Length: 522
Ligand code: GDP
Image (cartoon, rainbow, N blue to C red; front, side):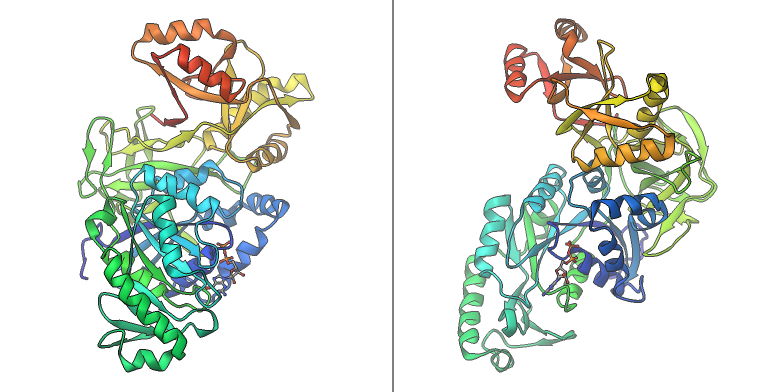
């Protein structure tokens, strides 16, 4: 592949998986290919430190580290790869969802002994929402695994996703000897991943030499069946998110990773255009545009400086250029945009579509913001998800109520939690997708604002954003449900329900109202 165009040679992707499937190990190996890190172990050291809650909070406090690891850029062959890290802790947070709005493709890592697990499915659903093409890596082939057909069948059935195995495992567990490329008749041998060999087909003596007689007979049968019964790879279906190419390997043994990186180059899409409210924006357009999908507070809690992560969508970002923040209409100077590497960051002199730059600011930028060279574009699609946990925030010292309100507003702008202000003037509510977000909130309010808070349940369990065809319909509903209404950070109306039953009841009674559990930032 030759792709000299700076847009076409970019691949911006994430890895989705259930904890322990091997995401960190694979990340490490991918970065090694790109020469982005010198020693395997760098990523792991970080992952180990993140394992417990308190450790994770400690890491959060050392913001430098987590900022640096949010985006990893490396070059390999003709391509520039931007790997966006989804948070490593088990609790689910909105950051993860939002990060997936900024990628063009994803690698789904599956543990070959376990198959599809809960978190993989959840993350997959987010990818599906946006038709993100998925490459599948079935990992840990060096251990005892489930039958490959079983695994493929499970992907197809539970995710409603067609599978097209590109490679097929030769043996498994202790007998795992490598893979066979079903279309191209190429054998890769374990521990000699870099020396692929062309063979005649599954009956080639080379394969016979790698496997025990029992494994050989089984593998030949499997390959014949796979070729006959399974779909061949179809790039169009893949790009539309209907089909996933499947690779077998072992991240730990650095096997199959090369296939994956080649597939990213050959199959995965370059940066796509984006829908703005007014029009489609093509990645190749000359004028710069981008959107902010993540905010991270910076190291010094005494200054409210933050890094806003912006994905460039079109044009070229140049250091020092002025860009319009469409939400406020103000121009801001991009004096110090930054690129991130595995352990390092540096000033970004220029960035292209698909790249992610960190923009230091003092609270000017919010999640969902669009920056342009002047046009009033608003990108859709950095979503908020209706929280799964709603809590009222309590503060011991009533004198600090105003300060608390301000602090909660800032935390909500950073995306740490969502903030809901009840219409009846009662105390602020916060909403989170994962419980860990509450711990992070409490810890940061204490550390950065000197506010000591606790959380209480209220009678409300769920909430939904509401819209209606006409303003008067909406008004009428809001007035009739005054004690169950709140507004979010952007003043959008939110209905709070005491139970799922209550929500359904109100939905049935108000057919003109749309209750939504996802809100796109405007
Ligand atoms: P993560 O939680 O998804 O980031 O998973 P890790 O990359 O931390 O891997 C979890 C565990 O599985 C670690 O002990 C790894 O060494 C191990 N592991 C990862 N890949 C492989 C593999 O290909 N084979 C084997 N045997 N173990 C692996």
